[in-house]
Amino acid sequence: MSSPYSPDTIETPLDAATVRPQRVLHLVSARTEGNLTVNTMLLPLLMRGDRRTLMHRVVHFAPGHPHANVVRQAGIPVHEIRLSRRRWSALAPRELVQVVREYEPDVIHAWGLSALIAAQLLRRVAGPHTRFICSHLQTEVVSPRSGALDRLKLKLALKLAPQFDQIVYPSEASRSRHRRAGFPEENSTVISPGVDPERFKPSLVARKRVREKLGLAANAFVICMQAPFQPEFDHITFFKAAGDIIRTNPHAQILLAGKGVQKGNAPLMALVGGGALATRVRLLGEWTDLPGLFSACDVVVSSALIDEQRMTLAMAMLCGVPCVATGVAAQGEVVGRFGINAEAGSEVSLARGIARVMEMPAEHRVFMARNARDNTLEHFNQTRSVWRYQMVYLGVPDAGLAPAEAAPAARPAVPADQSSAA
Image (cartoon, rainbow, N blue to C red; front, top):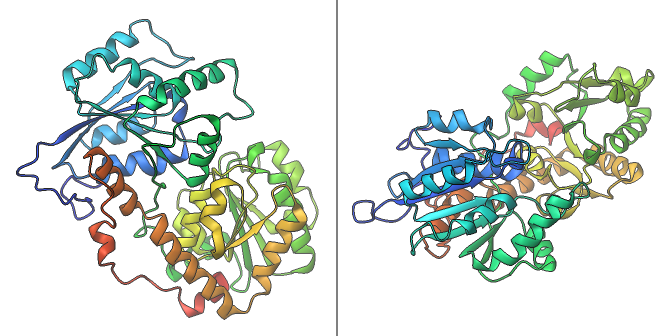
């Protein structure tokens, strides 16, 4: 874990000796647990932010959030208030008001719709110079599973959104869809979640280690998908496409990782079946070493019907691995021209995309992987994302690249003998 003044700290260009640290209060909605933007943006922002010019405090609307202890251990105060539909306390609004009065924040940052509404209700409590920022966490404005309460919150959020000083979206697709729903375009910006390029990078050592651990042959062509076993990630289409691939490719092997992706899952085992596919599939469950997993692969696949897997694709691309994915919403922004887009819900299109990677000459795969890594370094770099959020908090116009990007260190190339992985 990074200390405030470690080399990993992303410093602002302001003179800390003459600028009073800005106090930022983060309000985190209850339904953000496991959310992509919170996992890949809020936590790095708190861990790596410049604490000479910014002070942070966090309020979670649901006690027991997995990030709470991590943030506390970094020396950042965390308040857990029961303001969710499942865990509600009549005293919670008073507790929230008390936190604001004691902390006197310069910036209140709302993460999610519930936090957006709560932030505006605190406007009278906060000081007259307090700035209000909100981050929309999803690409879709309303999900198919949204109920009456969610739609009521959206209606209220649409009325309150123009009062915010800055609205931050995680992707252009998200901003476009929210604009069509009625959210204002003025004072909006896009800050993509970022991936740590020092953690996710090509590694022949990790490739060999993980392959040996899983008993994969040196000449195996490894196809990987990392996603929880949920309908929106469309494992059915993936298995159909994988079945087509292994029928004509004796060296193809399948790795599946994610929550619920394990042998005890009866619906999943029914998809695997008992034929040739079962002999080529390894179910890994919640695999924690994602850099090692991706390094061991030759192509990473996403059959998702939503864009929640886009940062998983960015991680794989930073590891020098080509990706085949459904180009839905912001997932298409990540893959772009540097991977292969497949039609969502089509096993034929997905299998054709995987086959294209398998049939590429080795040097072509290396070229694709290097371009994909360079593009991800430019657009989905954690350093840049944290830097841009800090500029928003300080009220400074986007000042271009962060210092670490202005003079980038040498980027690790995809090794030539990793061409089978790229």
